[in-house]
Amino acid sequence: MASSEPQFKMEVEYCLIPNRAPQLPNVQFLLHIRTSVRDDIGRVREDPWQPERQEFVTLPESVFGSQLHRHVVSRRLLEAGCLDQGHRLMILDLAFSFSNSIIEREKRKMMMKNTNGPDDTIRIIFRVEKIVRMEYYEELEATAMELSMQEDPKLVPATIESIQALKKMKLVEGFGNGDGVECMICMEKLVSSETEVVTRMPCSHLVHGDCIERWLNTSHLCPLCRFPMPTDAEKLH
Image 1 (cartoon, rainbow, N blue to C red):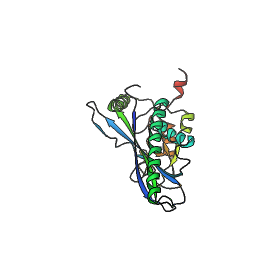
Image 2: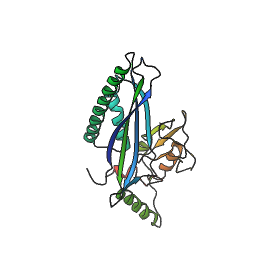
Image 3: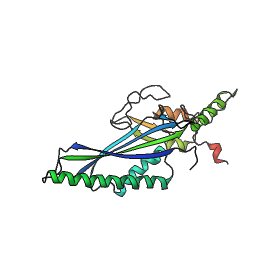
Image 4: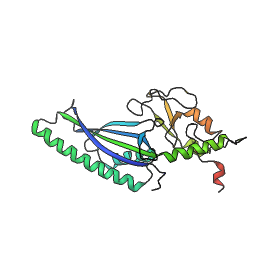
């Protein structure tokens, strides 16, 4: 893996939540993804420009760790930039194996205390940290500086296909909390609601869909980090 590519590591945590429906063997699952930046001397700090992502769901115990569940989590890691399929599978194998051992151990403890069924629901937490090297941002900054110093910079639009393929998502409560996060084009807040849909760039920056569509029809560069989207000129090479 190239040094400029992000690194991913995952920690598994758990806690017990009072069970309101003891007859239902459910498992709560929380996926938490955050981005950190590592500088030249190895110091790691949280990236203030990348919003944390959280996804919470209550699953039947039989579904937790199933192929469908693993596929969904793998997809989230891929969307976050974990492109190495082998690395994703290794992370998931370790995480789900450890999680299943936690579930079985806690179930035995609860059954020994209460023969009528478990009093608590097990919440499994996957904490994923995406670590980006400072050089990645320095390269983007250098590209932006080079473009800004051009006397007559030529704006190149992104391809229609790449604009249409951008991921749409809802900032519902508990997932990527949008409070205080602004669209970097219109500077208005991205609202967490069941109805408002926002667009996520490949670099993970969130913006209003209509704002980024107008922007990319003029310039193929992300307005915040200058991440380059595909252009028609690239198709000719």
